[in-house]
View 1 (cartoon, rainbow, N blue to C red):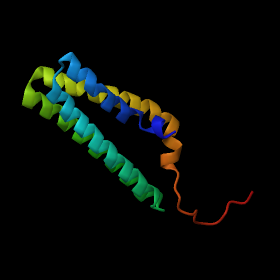
View 2 (cartoon, rainbow, N blue to C red; view 1 turned 180 degrees about the vertical axis):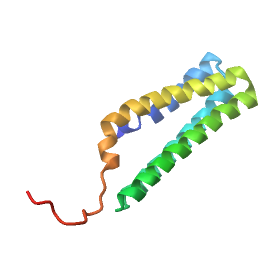
View 3 (spheres, one colour; view 1 turned 120 degrees about the horizontal axis):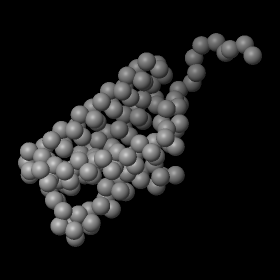
Length: 129
């Protein structure tokens, strides 16, 4: 299950030899890969921290803030690649991020239950059954 959960990271790392051998824009790959790996690690940290919070509103707010922050950082990395290296470099960064996100999104559908459940004990009265 560990390999499946981090399949997007494996894709990003496995793409490096293809980029180097194929003569594709290395700068775009490096910028996108570093941004993806850093934001992915940040996402894992935010989800772990959110699991420990008992209040559902605060937990949801933390998760949404993490998702939005990740989105902005990835978009900034693609724009940075475009500005720093030109059109081809920007396209390389965008393609890598799009491929990694597609894999992450598909896999998160199957693994999302683990990330959203809280380890905190339930509060309140039990429901009459």
